[in-house]
Length: 259
Image (cartoon, rainbow, N blue to C red; front, top):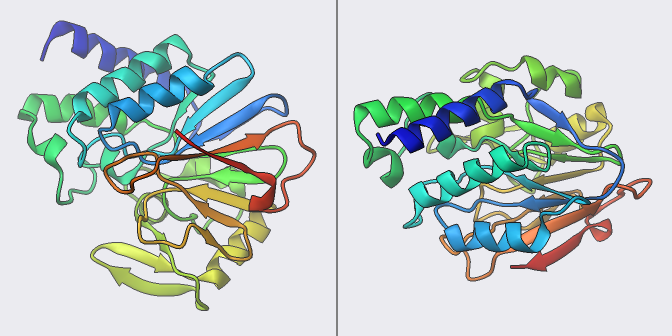
């Protein structure tokens, strides 16, 4: 591995190690939530150029590699921006960043790496945080919600455990039931599970990505699924939350824009 890339990964790992697994956003400015970018470097650059500022934080919901043609370039760019703007750029872990914990297929990025590169990227990306929370009622994760008693318990989730698997791999289905089984290693959860945990966490809206076949709006406008990569959909969407707003009641209080 080139010395420059090695240094980038080591520096980024140090920054991620210093972050909690649950990041609390402030009550000022705005947060721009970005769905899977999956090797879509143009999408990542467009988001940064358009939204990153002193008054806006950019929250990436995971899955930066695989599927798209520019996985290396995309993850290098995002890590570089994270180092330049450590508090304004937030990168959550997606299932495609957890390859060394739970292998999957297809994984064109990971399978293109040497064993040494795979270990180095894997060590860095395994340190990514899991979730963000806003003071006005929004939580952001990659997949589904972990079955923990309190929101703060997310900080105690270990990489690779059952709750980690739910965050990274979990899907939602808009039907009744708590645990709807699994599909190709992806646990499935229904509206009962969603409402129970959102009530426990005292949050009104979940913003997530991960599940391209999901209804974008579910559970009485309380669950929003977005994607920001042409690898999945012909449009790229971000969700903007006004952090100064007293309370976000539903998706109607969130602005959706195309990039």
